[in-house]
Length: 324
Image 1 (cartoon, one colour):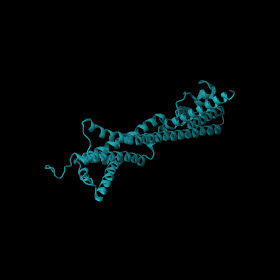
Image 2: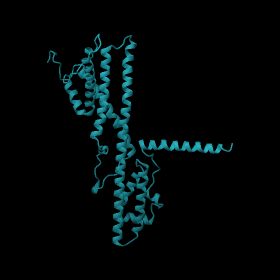
Image 3: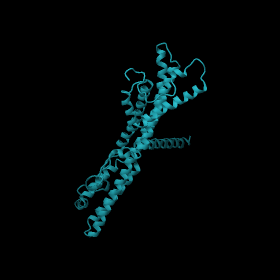
Image 4: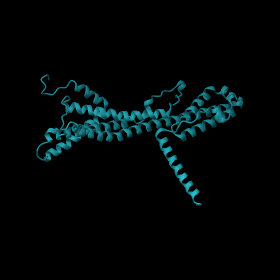
């Protein structure tokens, strides 16, 4: 009976550890939750009209205004550690500036002003790096979600392709099954190509923000990193979806004979004979899978190339077409 409280305490510690672990995972993916916003004066225990703080405002108005903006942005930082470190550094800088504002010595004031500027620049760099981290992590999360979703969609598409004919008392024959498999291989290649395209071309996903320097060469305050991470997550899985549609569109144009630039190494009708497949048929079957996978990969890898082929698909004609 005496061990019951100890057991309850152990269970409580395990539950608390599990809760902290889940919270850390959530913060790693979506960023630290928003905290109660506060001003520098509140953090330092000053009133807004405190004489020392007002003296600093009169001495360095632009610098202090920038620090106030950086402090507000730091409270929205993606990582909790960055939020705490930047806020602490800015608080210490302003506290030192308040002490130096009462000094009439010109060199001391100049050194204090330089320190305020250095701390503001360091905070801006930390927040830039934090926003870049949020952007990259959001993009990677979106791409990973798209890649995980791809096999699920493939399995569902294959199940639907098998189930729909059964509703009409029919079933897919060998040519239709091979065509469906080729389409799914092309579909998967489009997802892989889209992911590879993003990895190669967007080495620094933060470049998508196109942040320009503000007045006086001072960089603007970073955007909300949590919102930026959400935007980039959507951008990541959106790229995968675009790869799906481009690959499927090219499959339909090529397999339907509308786009004749590429010729599949084998057709389903030629591989579905009455007898067993020969060695040449096996080689043609394998080449067909690689062919459609490559078409899908190229479609997802290069959107301009795929869109160009789609435009040409409306003008190309099969050699046997009388209009050609």
